[in-house]
Amino acid sequence: MKIITDKKELQAFTKSTTKSIGFVPTMGALHEGHISLIKKARGENEIVIVSIFVNPTQFLAGEDFAKYPKKDEADKKICTLAGVDILFMPDINMIYGSDEVTIKAPNVRGFVLDGFKRPTHFDGVLQIVLKLFNLVRPTNAYFGRKDAQQVILIKQMVENLFLPINIVDCPLIRDLNGLALSSRNAYLSDSEKKEALKISASLQNATKLIVGGNMNIDEIKNVMFATLDGIKIEYIEVVSLELKQLKKVELKNTIILVAVQIGTTRLIDNLWI
Amino acid sequence: MKIITDKKELQAFTKSTTKSIGFVPTMGALHEGHISLIKKARGENEIVIVSIFVNPTQFLAGEDFAKYPKKDEADKKICTLAGVDILFMPDINMIYGSDEVTIKAPNVRGFVLDGFKRPTHFDGVLQIVLKLFNLVRPTNAYFGRKDAQQVILIKQMVENLFLPINIVDCPLIRDLNGLALSSRNAYLSDSEKKEALKISASLQNATKLIVGGNMNIDEIKNVMFATLDGIKIEYIEVVSLELKQLKKVELKNTIILVAVQIGTTRLIDNLWI
Image (tube, rainbow over all chains, first blue to last red; front, side):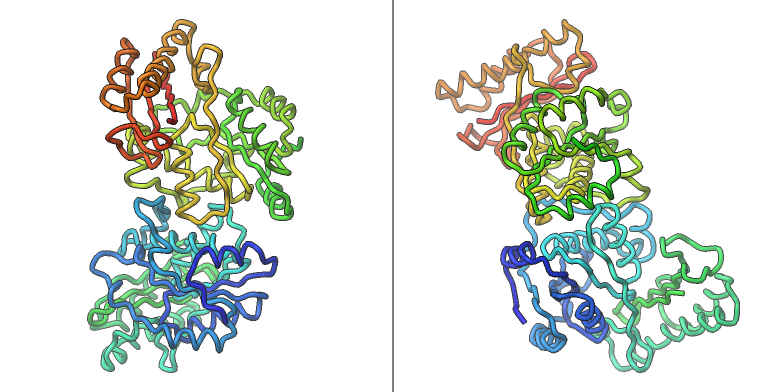
């Protein structure tokens, strides 16, 4: 595996190759969720490129940018073992200048759900992803469904800006207890981790209703609110793949999303129906 | 010359070719200024692609979008004669959807000069140029220095978003009387055209001062204001190639810009020192 820190070196490589490139952009602190993306990329492309860059523009003031988990050495080993060809780890000055041209998430879809709770967050996500796409020039780019709104907005950016890139959304990965994997789980104490299991339990209870034929969104939400009793809930929403409010659950066109705070840690989870 | 209206057809072509592509994006109503860009592109690339698209998102409410001059048949002839390979003339629905990911001009450089007078104008310019760049995938793209701030911001976008495109800025072209060519000159009456000659005269008078060794910006502006006596002036500014205010004229790093209104027509002109 080659580690590249210079964007010009990466550009020179990606411009010169005609091989298919699978790309997995990350903020590091890699876990099984990331590894599943890398493995899928490895199976579907001649070249696999992973980036690790904790992107400042997607953090709001007061969020956890400064303390975001960093595990560079472990991450390098994980990427080597997973068969990554190029690991791109740029310095912040390599990526951002001053007074830049920026990207703005869609006025509606970018400012509901997480975009409502974290306004301008998705502007920063789209900005870094577009920069990385233009450097890496991937054939396929891999994102987890864990960040549902993120992958939907990235697909929209690709469509709106006519980028010749295939966006692959990949299953959310859970630990043995059902907790959705996230680099931010590292912030949780043992008791908080136990409390956090109510999140996946709420989605399991929603699933039971739907499997039983109940497509009523109010009833689904009520069951979830009840399961999450005692937890600070940011939102529970049921939307279409276009992030529009639904009147009832539509098979293959529904995402149930939940965002909560456990202690000082913000956690999200979801279920694609 | 092939006329393409379908973006997918254009994409299929530009993705398949390995030849160098020179690109001239326009809003049509082509004049000698555009032709000079096309000729330069013709001389420097294997394939020349011109686009004609009157881009709604760069017009502000109340501006001349609806009445912007359209000369499709004449434009096609001009492009054929100039040796264009592909003329891309998309429909608006081919380019824009609803609730899009958008581009935002830089907070400072995008909102001075024309960006101050026409806020969000450059957001729309950068949006359409980025969309077209991603469809055309040019090696070189050609813009006139007439729209000085525009070409500078496009260069900045290419730098910020790491686009592998060379931006070529080309000389401003004037008619025999000195009037800077613009599709909007079509709005001028004969007497307004005569009045408009004061604009280039003001830049000539600025040049005389500079050639005489006077680099004092206040004095240059004063001469220009005097030359433009009787005309409604929007601004006269002297800035660096980074659009920063200068204390005195710096050779090869100075643009003198002027924007005026003649009747209901807004005209801009400039001089790169």
